Amino acid sequence: MVNQATKAPLLAVNNLNIRFPSVHGAVHAVRDVSFTMGREKVAIVGESGSGKSQTGRAILGLSPGQVSADSLIFDGIDLQRLSSKAYREIRGKRISMVMQDPKYSLNPVMSIGKQMIEACQIQMKVSKKQALARCMQMLEAVRIRQPQRVFKAYPHEVSGGMGQRIMIAMMLLSSPDLLIADEPTSALDVTVQLQILAIMDDLVQDTGMGLILISHDLPLVASFCDRILVMYAGRIVEELDASKLDQAQHPYTRGLLSCLPSHATKGQPLATLERQDSWLDEALENRGLRV
Amino acid sequence: MTDHQEQAVIAVKDLAIYFGRGEHQVKAVDQVSFAIPPRQSFGLVGESGSGKSTILRALAGLDHVDQGQLLLDGEPLQIKRTKAFYKKVQMVFQDPYASLHPRHTVDKILAEPLAIHGFKDIEQRIIKVMDQVALPHKFRFRYPHQLSGGQRQRVAIARALILEPEILLLDEPTSALDVSIQAEVLNLLNRLRAELSLTYVLVSHDLAVVSYMCERVAVMQQGKLVELLQVDQDGKTYPKQAYTKQLNLASQGYDRARIEQFIDHD
Ligand SMILES: Nc1ncnc2c1ncn2[C@@H]1O[C@H](COP(=O)(O)OP(=O)(O)OP(=O)(O)O)[C@@H](O)[C@H]1O
Ligand SMILES: Nc1ncnc2c1ncn2[C@@H]1O[C@H](COP(=O)(O)OP(=O)(O)OP(=O)(O)O)[C@@H](O)[C@H]1O
Ligand SMILES: [Mg+2]
Ligand SMILES: [Mg+2]
Image (cartoon, rainbow over all chains, first blue to last red; front, side, top):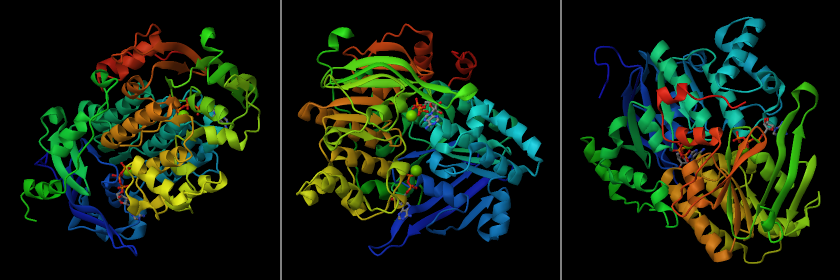
């Protein structure tokens, strides 16, 4: 499934595992996750708690858990061998991540403008004036109505969706090679949501950025992304072309599709999932592995 | 709408809420009125930054009111909300992480409202509510940062439900959840509404969720209520305003050509 067989992939993740040791026994949050991607749009969907965010954070070298992998290669760079200084050079510049809790990732006691300028200067090594212009440009690009006001505001003074857009603007300041966007538009009205996705789409088309989009919105990722990875209980249980979501084979993926509210379901309870332990083993067999 | 006014559980009359002053003043809520009869599920949708959360926060007594009135069971709400108010009205916040105390375990987060309101059967209620929101018991002694986004949101919903309120103010309650958990939470909310005769105000950007859950939907844009929609039995709405029609179109998925045609409704 390497989509650009001739070129080296942008990102190759090989048997990633993340564990959280605790007094009640270890939580094995991510189990043998492997995937390869080029400069394309890859969606990660899946159950809450299935390890999507932790996978993203591990690529950025920011997982709080115990991370191990056979290899984690970004654009020919072995991420596991990077010094923390070298990682800082990559993080935020070449690989950026929009976190799932946007407001939580902003500093509550610093104005939004100050944070943006600081991030911009670190990422791009430009003057304050150039940074200011770039920040304003990005706030407008993400359709913030009054960029001047928002620039002076503190995080608690903006709405949920504005917070998300500010984070997206910050992560795109320096045109990264890989953007990991964790539920980046979940608090946005649908119109703005599509407009923001269009910005990311342009970056993929024009600058060759790779995008990992973590999302719960199956119809949306099916219409937007190139490929979909489905995670369940820490594993990738299915890998699909986005246009073929309706042909999904795994019972978990098929179950997800039947849970969506629609016209047809008004007044009736929604279908829910009966989760089965056997799904874990099937997943391994599908990928040609033995349990 | 005026004919609902007498028996409405919640009425919002000419509500205006402003932030800041001078050229950067925001009319977060600009002359909004609606009334919600008992046991109705009332949806609020619309543009990001259009004042939906501000309305909910004002109802919950967490934001100031510049003009207009908020009525509960026909009685104007006082600025300082009473303990009885919070027994009756509970809110689920949009940002579950910010609203959960980072140094409290799930157990403590759930026990606290029970203690404040003098409940005795704390243990049973915690177990019951964790089951209701499909949160496995093993999470009971974890801290919020040790949970995934969806798990945190279920804690937030559980905390609101645990006092068995009559009115729930729900701000994007399922936007952090995967669709299977979303289905469980929506089914739970519907079941509780039927069993306990609850009234909901539900903010969501997901039009499919709102039309599945609600009988009426208010569409907000830049602080104003631009349209009040009736949801028919098949979950369909018939919008007249251009802004609402565009929202409906946008909810049909990513289509580059369509996006280019979106206009900003200023
Ligand atoms: N610091 C931690 N300590 C212990 N367990 C943790 C910690 N952080 C995360 N986990 C667990 O790791 C698992 C994976 O979490 P992750 O945040 O990756 O889920 P997710 O797929 O992003 O879910 P969601 O869709 O709900 O955001 C979860 O079960 C979570 O409870
Ligand atoms: N404490 C505050 N100080 C200053 N401005 C505020 C404050 N709270 C809200 N606002 C402003 O009021 C407007 C409405 O915000 P609100 O949070 O109600 O929007 P919303 O409709 O919930 O949006 P979203 O869908 O993005 O969550 C925004 O422009 C926001 O910046
Ligand atoms: Mg997550
Ligand atoms: Mg809001």
